Length: 76
Length: 135
Image (cartoon, rainbow over all chains, first blue to last red):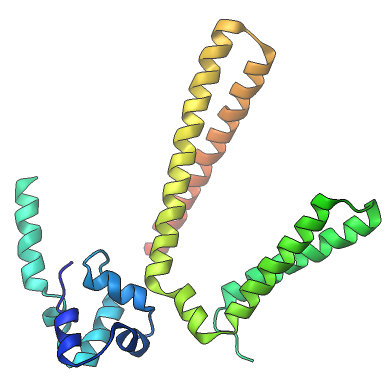
């Protein structure tokens, strides 16, 4: 799932380790989320959104991801 | 000292208890290298888990949602592939027995049949339990 985590993190001059410590996960989880190889749980997405002062919808690009999923479902 | 990861702590305790039990049995029966290895391995794993459970950083890594996700997925895949291998071996020994009528082949065929049956029953019960938990 695409997210804006990397964009928001670099804008805030934060390392992956610092963000991981703030939201109580390992840096490996943050790395996987940024690489789009893992989708965060709702609670984790909410915690990260709170760190950057954005909504979960903005953080997780929900509208964009929904449109991509709809296209994939149409092609099935 | 605070326990940050209770599951890890109890896993460690389990390994240490098993190692101590093995040691007691070993002293009673007589010592050999294999039993010594079991004791040393059990104690090492137990101490490793317990020390990690007291560490905040290590516990965070162990209980991290990605680690849990990977662990669950790996266990599910392992069960699936074990079932596939069981089905394959069951079919193989069934065919072999039908040709050879050998007692050993029959025993192996039955062993894999029971193993498969057990796996199917466990899977069914687990699914019922998970469905019930969600409702």
